[in-house]
Image (tube, rainbow, N blue to C red; front, side, top):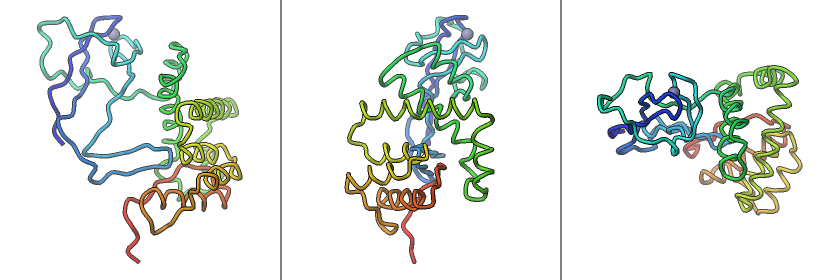
Length: 227
Ligand SMILES: [Zn+2]
């Protein structure tokens, strides 16, 4: 992985110089892929499309930022001046402040969904169902916020990606609507194959999870079984 010179941008509220990393080249070696389509690739990091000023707390779309006007801003800023993916509470605040619809709303809500899933993502198979539920939802109100967010993603997906049966089935599965998830896969002819390509393995595992009434995010295997 090689980083290019970062963009130097200005906070729209306090004017601080903020840095957005830029990738010169990268690859997906060692990448992990999850059922909610989160990708973690050490050699291909993802940069935030919306973020927060570390100085004043302002939230914004990175694409809306103007170049920094500070002629003395160094080319490579201090680490705390780089824009990062913001946490769950800030993402919810951004969603409420912006109150957008369509693709921008979908972008923010899918990040919120994945941040919830991060609470269980890494040890999901080592915990009991009750332990995963306790890790995913901190209270009834928190669970309600999670559910409403995912139901809205479901609506938006039907508009934005009406042919993406696997994504729609995954949302239904994570909402606990297992029969619906299987029906979506069936209707799209997605039978799955644990020895097949990436998508076939993903579908096979989704169907297995539905049969076990398991709604939690999982990592899809990145290579074929050699047995
Ligand atoms: Zn600021």
